[in-house]
Length: 396
Ligand code: NAI
Ligand code: NA
Image (cartoon, rainbow, N blue to C red; front, side, top):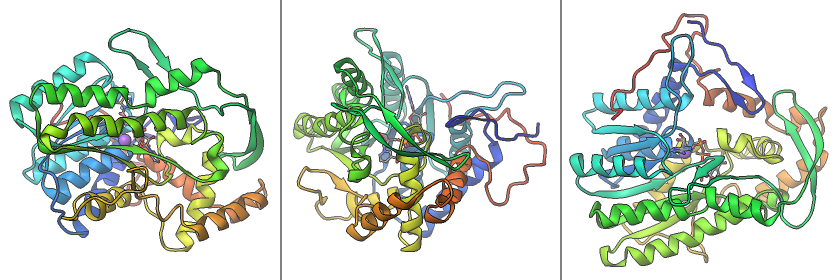
């Protein structure tokens, strides 16, 4: 079929298999171009199909020749209906990994559930024995708790007072003021239940209890801080409470891994266009200004550049891992540079619907958004018929 984008708000209902495959190939080629990393050999990536998780899987496999198991939640294709992009990404990744002689298998289902954890543990036991790196990169709007059965929905709200600021509808380019009502206690608890560290801790507990973590095993989860501009809705909002919890969980996990000499880290990453970040109010306007400034400075990075740098210059340098005063690895260092933030803050004040096309990188935002779904990718002919029924070669 001919596949075109069908956009509804901040999601796209269709995905293009060849476009997604090209994106994955570009990421693989980037990692290879940066040379080998003395990194992990057996890697489990939870949230492996898109964004930072996919970049982590690609960097492990093509930077360190690692065997990888990916866990993700994606929609398979049906006749006349495309799969979700992470499905096509994973198919392309596993095809390339197998061609390179690398072990790569995956599990599609709810990573929060007991069933998917058990299935993953069984696969590790049967095929890999022990894991030396676990990447935790889930971004989900909801979580059904495996013990209580309660479904928690996360919200993106400020805490304490109404937050009013500008935002942009990145499809139309219209800049407008929005006000977001503050969260109540239940909103905070629900968001922490979904995006906090409890599930990360459960994964590590179960892997360890089953003897599936190698001595010296490392686990990394991803966090975000960002500037004062977005603080009320991000770091000091409901999602920020979840990130506080995730960051605190790293210490709890490290304690539990002491006998294995293992360690848990949180890496603070840069703001990027992903399916998860497009849904957060105010962030798209911030990202379009940030892209403009970072591209002008020659320091813009996407997920793959961020994660390649995380592995090569933070996690696997041969020396001790450097962290900030709160124990976090920082690869948001270039985003948070004072000169970058001063420029973004100045542009923020002058950005209107009329000026944003020049003050911000709205075109870059839109392109990255379409790229997430395999559209607007260089080298792909979108007028040509394509087969939506793609299989994932390593799907268990
Ligand atoms: P994403 O939306 O691209 O990836 C989410 C992944 O989680 C996908 O592989 C998806 O299939 C999987 N997933 C979602 N629900 C699942 C479930 N129930 N079971 C199994 N898999 C499930 O998101 P992104 O942006 O890569 O986010 C990953 C982490 O990085 C999050 O913790 C996010 O907060 C963090 N982060 C994101 C930043 C950004 O600007 N996008 C910046 C810094 C950190
Ligand atoms: Na991810």
